[in-house]
Length: 159
Image 1 (cartoon, rainbow, N blue to C red):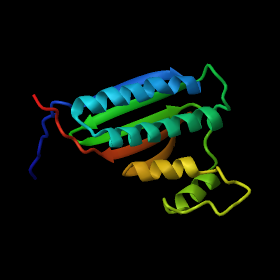
Image 2: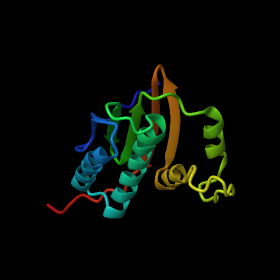
Image 3: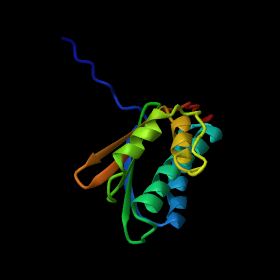
């Protein structure tokens, strides 16, 4: 058996930070993405989609998980390996109901919400599913983890 070792690229890294569960704190997360992705040459349109997806997941945690209660914590881990981006948003709120998760994942990303009594439910996650290559939820101990993965278009800046 042959073992292949990969050497880290010049822009490979992992960054983890936390912020308070307030919607007015999402700007910091978006700024981090803007700076990192511009640095490695990701097009603005792709950067905006990633900012939107991560903001939607974090705002769902704030609004639905924490019920907008300040003083709670959200962790964000950004890992870049070559052109592969992984973003993990972690909160410590109660778990999302499994029936709701099944319902959301049963829809195709372009399905409209047919339930007129719930016109806004699940649309944010549908947008996230369209913006990234993969989306997964897990519950680890007392934490909810939402992982977003995206293969980036990287155009290094001119020297």
